[in-house]
Length: 330
Image (cartoon, rainbow, N blue to C red; front, side, top):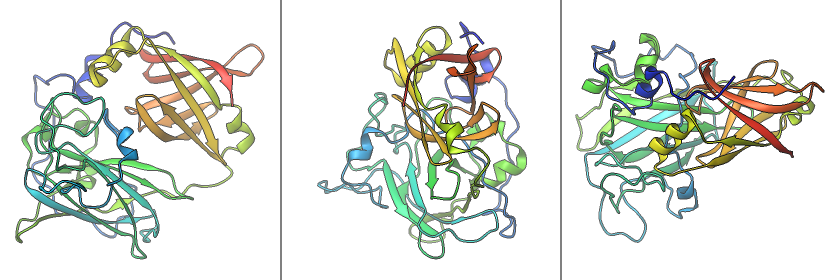
């Protein structure tokens, strides 16, 4: 696969880099929650361009995003409490799961080193972390996120727990006009949209939303640790062609090249880039993994004549892919 000089327009629309000229299918009405007896895994959605990176070192990353330690004010915007449970694929609560959330502030700006556009709110924490209790429950206090680019209003979540696959997803707001045109939202089926869309309950002084997230248990033995170690290493990606536009337009920073690092912890494989935190990639078939958290891509490892892994390809499809060359093993 060769790095393309341009991307399919559909990919740019789903990333929020363009404004759709037509109306895609949206939802007319969403209930407060999906059927509680349904144990379907929550749809996995990408991290987006501004997941917590530098902000991970901030001292204040508690469950109240509306106040920042050392600041006397409160974040601007409508206050909102989002509560829910982390459940497994048998609908059982998951205790001790790490739940991370991040989102744009009231003005549509993320607290992120690469997000330089929009108005900063010094009283908005931007990112928070909770650990679920014995009932799998978590709760965050935040604000209704503002709009940016062509994206619909949404909140990001990442759930991690040993013995389970990482879950990266997004929560959407029922009744939003941009739900009809948001590219990521409209890549979902109607049933999947129902799983990640909720209505705000404004019956009390503090607006509330309920959002349960279903995660999937990892099944040991699918790929041995020895096989995964054959993929680990550093891969150099030249930022030319399509990847140049992806990086420059999303992150507002010029990269001539970047290193993609592949690591493993036991029977789980991870990918880290200068523009993303470490994320799990999930085995699909020989040398092929789901890298859904990175813009819904596939990760494919390539081998040389000696059958050793020497390259990796990140791809939406055969016409839209990036190739990185292995420079070192770990």
